[in-house]
Image (cartoon, rainbow, N blue to C red; front, side, top):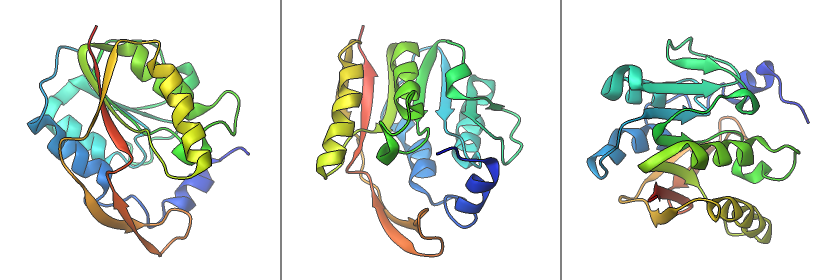
Length: 192
């Protein structure tokens, strides 16, 4: 299935356009717990660029976002497919391209490509936040695909250093609130 710009606009009509989302919370708080090496601070899957704006306000031109469409016309968001993104040194990547639940549906898979790009481009001492876990059998298969990628790189995988519990609009059921937490997300550090 191909998702158009109109699909994403309609899907996000009342979802994920809030300063209270998990992504924004992570970008506001993670840097109180980690020190970054030199490199870009990257938001893969910038959507409406709220989390990117948090990164930009903290890191200036070191911050860069990427998405198929720059819905918010943010000056630091590249309109580009993950399949066309060039390599560059990254101190931090928030990898949120496509959806964890869509891993393996398309070949090539945007989420797996973005995660591989993240692991490859992190510099030593750099960090990545992404969803790595789930609770169904299908989720475990998705997790295994991501873990296969991590085996290619010298990384350590840890829980986030803080807990997030919140309510966001369910992107699959507009207008319906759903609980969101940090239990499936991880902080990955490149150690070599």
